[in-house]
Image (cartoon, rainbow, N blue to C red):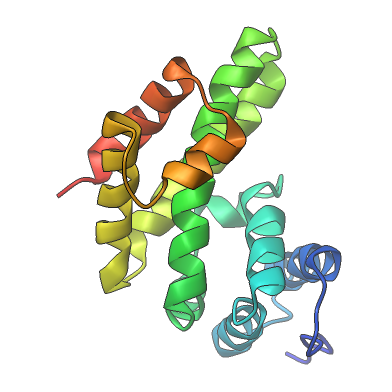
Length: 177
């Protein structure tokens, strides 16, 4: 198993998406060991651009790898808790709201893609062992239900309406302790 993949020091968002696709391809053909996979993804999620690109590339990929993440992926995500928590929580909100948006536009295909991203994000949230994650999930829920809290600016910036906020709440409810 010899891979030539590496994470550039100042990786851009676009480079991170492309690298994530390459990592998935190499995992699929057995070119990367679990240790190599963990190391590469761990290096990716250390930076905001790398982590954002990883989640976009990974969660939207058409291949089934993201439906059944390995322990190496969980460990890699756990290595950068601050960045990963923020992005997982916001991804859950965004893809949940986008399901509503696409359904309103009668775009079931894209709505189904958003549902897939929501399912994959939920699986990661349930599987990673990051102590601060559940508190952040609860904070997002509080903000969607009361309009107050740490995620107020985030939700306001995206302009989510009542129906979209309800969809976010429904995505969060099964994750609450």
